[in-house]
Image: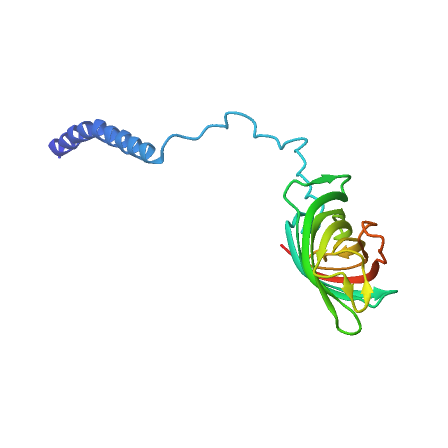
Length: 219
């Protein structure tokens, strides 16, 4: 019995350091798997910006018709104090950059216009004409309303029409009117007062006036 106890005591003394080493090895393995313990943050969290820069406001809406460079359309002239109605097709060109901004709302623009048409009297007698010349516009950019004036030299196929002498084949066509291009369309409508005469080149210069209605497409 005494020998058995002595043997167990020797085994126990042998196993004690082995157990300690095993516990240390197990602890090392656990800590290695868990990783290092996170410490406190390096510094305080960033504070929100005290006065953030304001976002830019959208630009005020404007009508894009002031940027249209070309237009094509048709006109009808109702005679005022004469017997000559007229029809014509016309075109207009306002080159890019040919304008001056007078304010945030108003723009002054210049361009070139041309047309071909015919005068007709009550007896259906016809005289064809061609004209070309400058055009000026005062454009309200927010509404699309335009005040338009023009004065152009014109050449007529004949100056005797329906028994009335207009004096010369060479005439001048002048008008002033108001036009509107709605904000979301390319269509332009308008009305103008128009005068045709030879400007006193001939001693015979009766002249004709018309109330002119126009419809055009701008692009």
